[in-house]
Amino acid sequence: MIDWQAIDTVLLDMDGTLLDLHFDSHFWLEHLPRRYVELHQLDEASRRELETRIVGEQGTLDWYSLAYWRRELDVDIVALKREVQHLIGLRGGAMDFLQWLKNAHPRVVLATNADRESLALKLPLTGLEPYLDTIVSSQDVRAAKEDQAFWQALQDREPFDPARTLFIDDNPRVLQSARTFGIRYLLGIRQPNSQRPERTLSEFAALDHFADIYPGNAAPAVKDQPAK
Image (tube, rainbow, N blue to C red; front, top):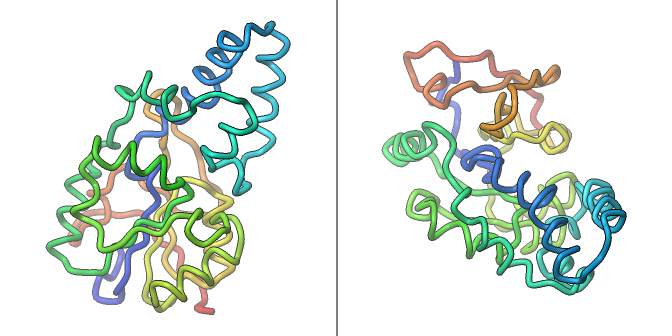
């Protein structure tokens, strides 16, 4: 069980944690490569090359930057995202969890690798913003969450005690980075994409449902990490 009395700050990822990762997986691995070859009248080999390149860029600041891909591919990334924006949606129970957090009064920070253009698209469609005390994007601090520089910059902007902080994210590499920084309470997401099977996170406790960590409910064992 999480001892909520020991937590002052909750850091939340967006894509794959609060939002269903299906939209992003479909856009980057299917929709964008297909529309890219259509718009530039390229062949199937070019599509496969782009798919490989996209996967290879994952985890870098450029990978999360719509401006970077717009320059590199000479396509309007936001316009292409709007073509499939009907796939943007909340993970089950996410809004109830945010409402519960609002009533419980920890400070709630969206700590996301999504850039500001992505946020401008998704926030109005999902209604997340009223439940967040602040939003920090990797674009704001010029470092992805996979890098220690993100966490130091986040703490400089939004002071928090790592020993009294809960961080929830679907990306094991990001969770490992947060652990290295010293964030004590870490939770992964077992099924970030509703259209793909559940995963096993060997190094981190993982959520099936947000309700699992409400006080009084059965919850996954949260692995304490030593404070920095």
